[in-house]
Image (cartoon, rainbow, N blue to C red):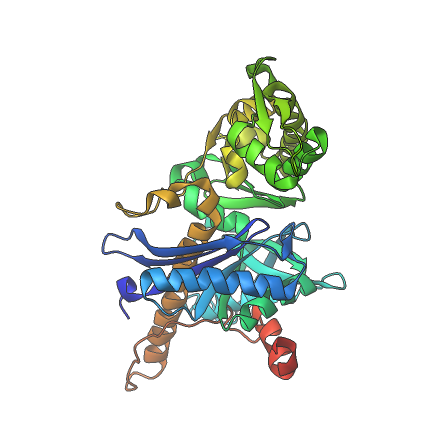
Length: 441
């Protein structure tokens, strides 16, 4: 199958919205978003499913809208996973090869990754993803692509993403009840990074901060490698709640106030700038000063940024991030957020728009940071598709070497995430539901 004929769907199950984006790759390698569907998320809290039926209904509405706009029947989706239960660790694995005269094969690399998936976790936790950072062959470090090289010892540094088993199972259940199949579970900050960061920033060192409704996701890159990920259990919703309580208004009006008039810096507003909120059931309108509104927003925003700064310092890369911080997600649209972040962290800051890898002529509304995760899921879906195709080609070539007279079959795309004897996290969840069909009825 030609790469340009492949269609990838990203499903962003967020706290404030659920978005489905349908994308394909054009002849120049750029991503074309064919359509998008978006609906309010009413069953997710802080990135974790809290109501199955409400989440299923939201997913179905978003997918139906995307299908209607693109005339594409959606069956398979790449789903983002986040939430405060997500954490990460660094680990090194190694294998000793039996025959050093043979080239390092894809099977050797797969075996190394499968060994990482068998690490012991705390009860209730599972390894969601294993991301190789760099390979070491016979103590020679800094190797990005080991297949085809010679060596006795093959080692690698891995970035391992860990999450709660139940949280992932609930996402899987919601997607299955929506009559969809999951190709892959992808960590949302990694997806967002794919959409808004340039290769130069990832090489120079950058912290991607995705401010969503329920959580703030962080991914730190340096020398082209992901070094640290974290999820902070605060986002735009907690700012809205503060406005609601501080101004004694309903949540709907608090959200509108924040979006239209909110600012992360109180000093830029004057005391005499006032906005009126409609009263309830015939009551007179409520007047709120924009300076007071900004003071409420600034207090909570400072707390979120300080958490982000602590994570950056905790990663050990604070002084190595030449490209500074890139803010994205719906929360990044808050006025004067860049200035406040620069003041607190002392680092360069910019807003990340997800048009870095999109083809010209893409829908203007999709250039908003709000869609960074959804577009990133499509881009990362293509990256993983390419990786599986490369694996298939390597296996076909190795099979041909072993059996020269056997015909080489054309590689086909695969939806599995692991080809070794150890099962990936997604495969374990699939088996769990296959054994008990009532789980998704």
